[in-house]
Length: 595
Image: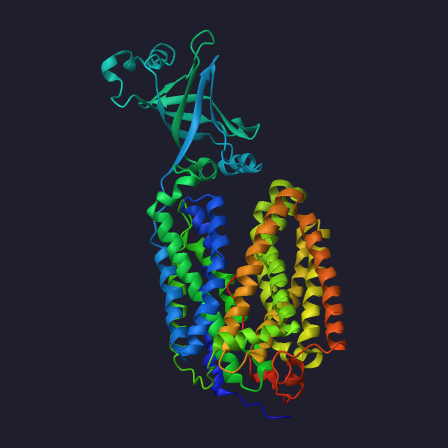
């Protein structure tokens, strides 16, 4: 049995991938829900997450070029780790924007009710009524009201509600607000025409019960009230921002959030691209071992993401909103350890390009390189559909199949999906990527990734029971693990000497800033117009067509002898075939970019 030798020089690189991905895993998946909790609408959240990939697209090649030009890869690597952690941590201190819960109070013809109708295209969850009944165990719902009044309304309060104290003008509050508590039996809550109705059985004013009776032959008693009910499900449904979407740019909370997210996203983008460039330089003539370094990032992401949600739930017990404090501290601590390990990297940038822009530009003279960049964009489209809309699709399927019962297990299923994607998909393929690339070459690997996306999307489109998504998630090894190893190693091999960080940044920018950003826009519009299953079917058919087209184009390129990307250097396939067959089991490392 051959003796296994651990390359100690690469250990800090492995530690970086593990710690950086572990450090971003607690906050990145939860950030959209935290932003909503601060009071921003889904429209604002969507807008922010359209801009962030574009930020990554701009900073990756820019700072990659700076790192190559001034030979400061390691310095920028450490600086941008700080730029990732600190803004994320500061988001924890941003207060929520002003919010309010407003209902319409109607008293007429011997009955009273509260009504809430959502605005801005939002809707009430169909299962909310069931959850209210279940959570209250048939107990009455108590809602404290502060209602605007007209002078004549106090006569109704005086004569028909038997609140005789208000018959005297001197006892009417100076702010003219009617304060009372409405008692709503749980079985008197209904959803009618997309509006939530609460039939009020009785009221309480100044500690006394009042009938809330209004005759039919008198002026209609209808007003707007601020409300605070003793049921968190109800309050979550009816609470909304006081600020319209078009006016959020006037809030300091929005600009703090936006600026902090931009800095953190820029930090992550540069750390990923420059880190990959450093990794390939340290690997030297063994770029096929890249996946074995990056898989440690998958281990970090998958491990921490599994229990980060549990910790949030644990620390949020008894609180009205989720408490994310623990995950922000986890991010700072883990990235702090990452900086310590990264400072131990034995890396010296020895190759320098005299004209980086010219050297990088020359590679586009190769038709095969142009096809490679187009491939990166197309994979970005497919990746966006999975990252942003897979969970949405599963929740739609669960709702259609199980009605309201899915709310008890859907998050558990989503957690299992993330775990399978990481440990059942990415890890094995990052580990095996070196052998796969040596066996079939980069070009065939690119075709295989397109085929994997096509099959995966078509399987999603056939789902009726969301639990059957679990075996499909093993394909994440092909569609992300093999894809990312192929993309990064191909970019490293074709990069002219001294342009490695620039090339990694450019490739990452094209994938995420163009592909993922545009893919999110397209997928969102398709989901809205044709639904989830049809969207996945459309993407699946398109991926299979592109798979066939890619194979044909590469065959024609080989037949007609297209110019190789770097005259005087080995082509990617040839470079790999000339490598020694190292044993990757001791070279483990790697991971997934923040999702």
